[in-house]
Length: 248
Image (cartoon, rainbow, N blue to C red; front, side):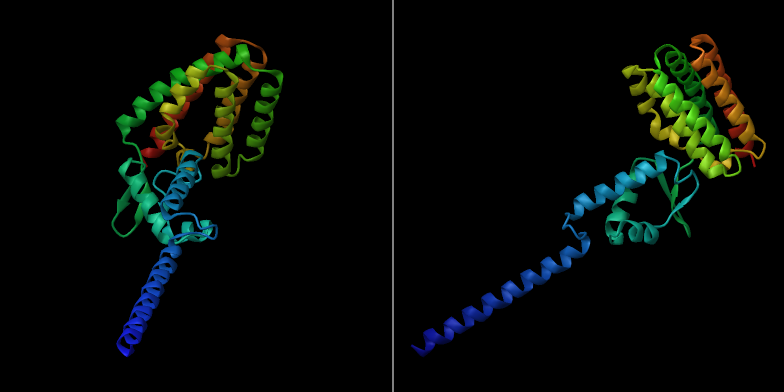
């Protein structure tokens, strides 16, 4: 009887400690989860998407450092999902790891830049021509509103850079051609590596405004040929400005 009672106590204690350690493991695992108990894998995916959008939108420019601690704090997560997201971006060529600096947004080499601008020149011209044909009055008014905001941001290259890309995407969508959008989406990640504000020379902001105004005015006039030519000239000039700043 006493032996049975003793064995029962041992079994109870063993069960208690097993539950204790299981619960402790769960608590430690929850460190990698946010307040909504999102699984760690989902957290890493969420951080990845956030960083990808930030790079695409120009919030992180080519050559700019991505700081783990700052991202973790901003997104209210531990560094673990941030590291996983950065490793994924690195495997995709969007981020490189440099000694002493850590994660850096990747930059294209000179040949890659030239190839991408050659393709952009064609696509941007087609997009502007389609927009002149198919944009609604509301979409054109939106382009003009973005254009005015860019004029107010001429003294802030970083803000100007973001607004300029907002205008380009407004033109893409105003063309109402799904296959054009798919073509642009296919190179969107590479295009994001052209967006650094440091690729805007000091004399470029006013030129950008005038070139964009020429495109929007042609779209407003419903002149596809003029819109296409204006867009192609704009990309040609942007390529020259990029090479000029890249050489510094």
